Amino acid sequence: MARFQTLPILLALASALRSALAHPAKTQGGPDDSDNDDTPLPVVIWHGLGDTFSAEGLQSVGALVEKTNPGTFVYYVRLDENPSNDRTATFYGDVNAQVAKVCADLAGHPILSTAPAVDALGFSQGGQFLRAYVERCSAPPVRNLVTFGSQHNGIVDYRACSPADWLCKGAMAMLHTNTFSDLVQSRLVPAQYFRDPRDLDRYLDRSNFLADINNERPDKNSTYAENISRLSNLVMYLFGDDTTVIPKETGWFEEVNGTEVTPLRARRMYLEDWLGLRALDRKGGLTFRTVPGNHMQIADEELERVFSEFFGPANKRFASGDGYVASDEL
Ligand SMILES: *[C@@H]1O[C@H](CO)[C@@H](O)[C@H](O)[C@H]1NC(C)=O
Ligand SMILES: *[C@@H]1O[C@H](CO)[C@@H](O)[C@H](O)[C@H]1NC(C)=O
Ligand SMILES: *[C@@H]1O[C@H](CO)[C@@H](O)[C@H](O)[C@H]1NC(C)=O
Image (cartoon, rainbow, N blue to C red; front, side, top):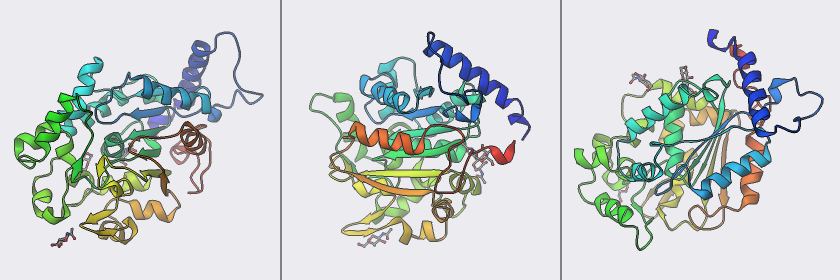
């Protein structure tokens, strides 16, 4: 594709600039420093409910990405430059508009828009929002998407609020009141991925976000499926002792109906490949992992392991057989 023709130069420039800024006194890398395929792909992180882009905990995850793969440019998704408004936007707003804003922000970002691809890391609801990015947005493309405790198959409940968090409590109270009214669907973020298998028709009819990005309605968007199947890897982490997200199995895209749990690979959406997940699985690009602990309790060692396995150099090869994601387009 034409838009990639100037890319190696831009990438080299961006990389040189980055290392000059980050390491003014020392040179980076070894003898093949000139090979820009060694440059780690940028990493885009989308935080979860109640968090902000500037939060210390999130920034320390970014620091860990850079420690694992030195020279990585890390971008923290934000809906507002003001951290308090960014936090509010995790509870209130139209998710479709939020994803569209993030598409525009990434496409207009001087470094991200010139990278051949990015890797993406989504925490909790940030995971399904980044998946929507992959399905709906154009540039930069995503190589690997890693999600932790995300609500890929929706929720029937969310127990996320600390005792004094009134913003959170207000949102959660609203979640179960007129969940599928226009007002709540266009304004309350968790309502837009509320999905009860015992009340599926109303969800299919009314859901403002999840039913669309999951391609569950009769009219499927083939771009969504193509884009998911073109990922090198989708890595879904489940928190083994998650009591915040109900049901926790949503982290693996499983269907939980009462006591019945249907694994993704046995679901119609997979068998008929509504979303490209089966195609991705067939090339070895679909990974299910569990970490012990409650929602968002992740050991640094686990993060470092996944960063070193799935993030890093643009020319990295994966079990899915995929190498440099844009190589067939150059
Ligand atoms: C599918 O999604 C893409 C990206 O959001 C959009 O441009 C396109 O119009 C959609 N196609 C259909 C048939 O809805
Ligand atoms: C999704 O697919 C379209 C059409 O092939 C492509 O232009 C776009 O880069 C893809 N988006 C992502 C984020 O991979
Ligand atoms: C869930 O189970 C109920 C019966 O308990 C059934 O009526 C409903 O169709 C099931 N939903 C799905 C999505 O299978």
